[in-house]
Structures are given as structure tokens and as C-alpha cells.
Amino acid sequence: KQEVTQIPAALSVPEGENLVLNCSFTDSAIYNLQWFRQDPGKGLTSLLLIQSSQREQTSGRLNASLDKSSGRSTLYIAASQPGDSATYLCAVRQVAGNQFYFGTGTSLTVIP
Amino acid sequence: KAGVTQTPRYLIKTRGQQVTLSCSPISGHRSVSWYQQTPGQGLQFLFEYFSETQRNKGNFPGRFSGRQFSNSRSEMNVSTLELGDSALYLCASRSGSIDEQYFGPGTRLTVT
Picture: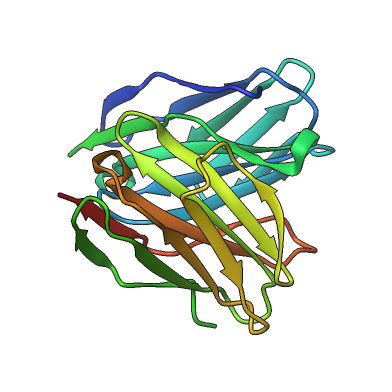
């Protein structure tokens, strides 16, 4: 069964700092990987989608990379802002069973 | 374009009762997936519907069921509610040709 792990579980940084969130998965047979943010009590907002054939995707201050062979993805956030405070989740769409599996998330706090 | 909508947003039910949740996907999206989110288990996949057919199913008991209508709107039903069913229920839609999932705000179900 696919297992998706996110480290660290929580992260607190001062405003302006660059940071990296990690996501690892055990089964590399995936169609794609998607990063989301979730604000408390709310639904998920899609940030970036990386297809299995791609190495990275960029959107504004966000950059996500994918190393499928090693089962890892990173989300890089440049020049962090207090508005970036949220829980960040990664999800993989596995080939076997065609299901999505989510990580447990990283809770990010950006201190003004 | 309107986003994914879910109704109701909050629900309180008693053990043993049943509940029906509704999800309207983004216009043109034919796939709807349902997820359960709890603090202990995180986000877990329930099932996915595509063009009125259940395409995938997660590891949940038969008390959890769903259906999709010809206009792609989907309902999820939970019968004989248990305390452990208290959770945020999220639905997500995608177009089918593009994998990016878009989530609704969720329905917060509390079972007493």
C-alpha cells in the first residue's frame, strides 16, 4: 500500500525566509503528485501539479520538484509571508488502483 | 467559473442515524471523489465517481456509499452513524482529462 510521509510535521520560520517542505512516497509507480494548502477548517487549495514525466513546476514564489525514482518531492517557498501560514499537503495518484494518497501534512507558521 | 460546492456545511447527527451529503463539481468536470479527514487518520479516500459509475473505492465499510447523477452532482450517504464518523468530508472534482483536483469547502459532520 502506498505510504506518503511529510517531514517536518510542523515548521515555524520568520517572515522573509526561504523554506523547503518534503514529501516522500513508497511506491514510485505514480501518475502525478499534487501539492495543496489547507487553512484551518477549510477545504484544500491546489498549488501545483507535477506529472510523473515532469521534474518540476513553478507558480509565483512556489517551486515543486519531483524525483520519482527516489520517491521524493519538495515544495520550495521563497520569501515566506505570514499569509503562507497553513497546512501543506502532498498527494500522489498511484497507478495501481488509480487512487490518490495524501500525506499527513506540514503545518507552517510564518512569524511577522 | 464557480468552484466545487458542498452542502450542508455543518451537520450534527445522533448515533444510528443516517446522513446524506451533496457535492456539485466544477462545470464540465465529470469526476467526483470523496474524502474523509480526521485529526488521527488524516485524509482518506472514500470513492470516486466518473460519468455516474463508481471507478474506485477506498477501504471503508459498506455503510459508506455514494452515487453520481447525470449532471455530475454527487451524493454520499452514511448509514448507522457511529461516533468515529465525525469528520470533515471533502469532495474534489477534476475534468478527467486533466488530473488536477479541485476541492470544495467540506461538510463538517459531528455525531453525538
